[in-house]
Image 1 (tube, rainbow, N blue to C red):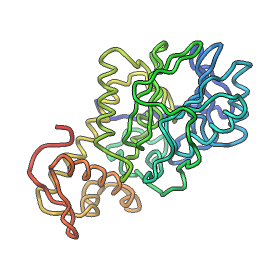
Image 2: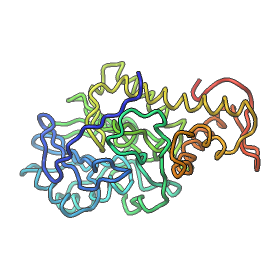
Image 3: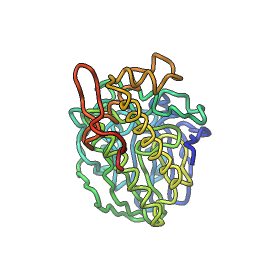
Length: 325
């Protein structure tokens, strides 16, 4: 399957949109090159409610989320990870409702920021999908968030009308968690999978091997009949996630193969690799694209396929093979 992005979405800022029975979405008005149309906060449950990815601490958004409760009691505030478009409003919502916050842990010291590439959400099919994985530093990390309850892989969180399984999915950031709601067959993948864009994987905290392993895990879950629809924090639902996530894996492995083929021709620096791999991408995006290339190189190094040859760049240890092969 070719990697095709979902480009149609109406955020309806500040309005509680009924996605399905017992499921409401409120989108924060924080559109950007990292957030697409903005942060989608989900309210799941009937008598009791879990709030997923509260979003940025913007007063209109917090007010809209609280209004969308319509008298229901919040029992869980779930955070997929600690980028500033996902977790900061957890504090305000927790104070207003008394509900505890849940997440893997505080912001990792080595984590850089940025959630997606710099293309417009209306970008359509893209081959150089991670070309604009533009990474800034520190500013977008929510370093104040500490969950009241630290979740771990396999933990189950239950309330009246929902049951979530916690899936630790590092790669984009080491404290990333997806939440699988078994009663409705839904997965809330945060930024691990997005329909509008590829996901930034930026070293040193970002880990390409872990990211690809997490994608493969989700493919396996779909083959087992779980997680029929994905509801990413940014953008529209992914209603046929199995082929789409498999295409994301293939895309990453193709980048891996490109790197190995180029290194078979001689030692190259990251900049030299980017110049060839992203020749059809605007030059101002080559530096951020290098973060993605570096993530691939580090994963290939751990797999014993390449090694760093400072100051000349990177060279192959042996030919053939690819990430995860």
